[in-house]
Length: 307
Image 1 (cartoon, rainbow, N blue to C red):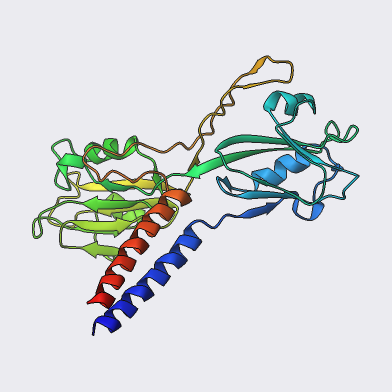
Image 2: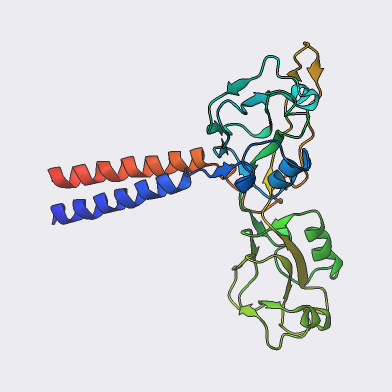
């Protein structure tokens, strides 16, 4: 019996290890795709447009495909990037293909130092970000899901200062039998009509996953609760990332380069009374958690075998 149990536990360890590998898997971006790393015909905008179509996260890899002897890749600071100055690069690769791991969040700059290639547009800037953690919002915070004294404006104001993204969820706290939650379409929301609801939950607390982009509408269908203001509309956006500002770095001449501003789409704070999110969903944090689970399971398996 103990042996069978240990085999079961070891199987769980294998699954956990697989999750560890999956969670830490990085993406490799082939710079320029079919264009590769060369002097582009339409100048620097070619690589700007390529980068705009990508999402770069810490741990990802940039792969520069080029012919050795005709091009190279230098990682530089912003001042050197703007001036196409190849003096004192951070890193310099002369053999193609060349890979660069994006190990830190923020702006990263790359140029070709051969002849006038950089000034002709062979330069690339990428913005590396960390993913914002998914958030569970408790609707109304301490008020919960009820008929509000302030009418519909109460839940409008609650939602107004929050950023809802795909993957987030809403928790409706209410007393079973006194209220319910129905996800409805806009027309039904406006008219407080609970007919043909998309989904209805009658037991509290009720959880709704925000798994699609766009407006989501919720009402209470009990009595005239909706018309008294027990209704909520939230606008869900695509999952974005947070990027810290790039710290000032010295230019080749020794003067400081101003820090690059961080992009919009920073993570919203956890609302009062809601479940606080974990730290950003970075691969290292997930890896540590899975590794700890694996170690625990192995200990249990060893104990079972000894028993």
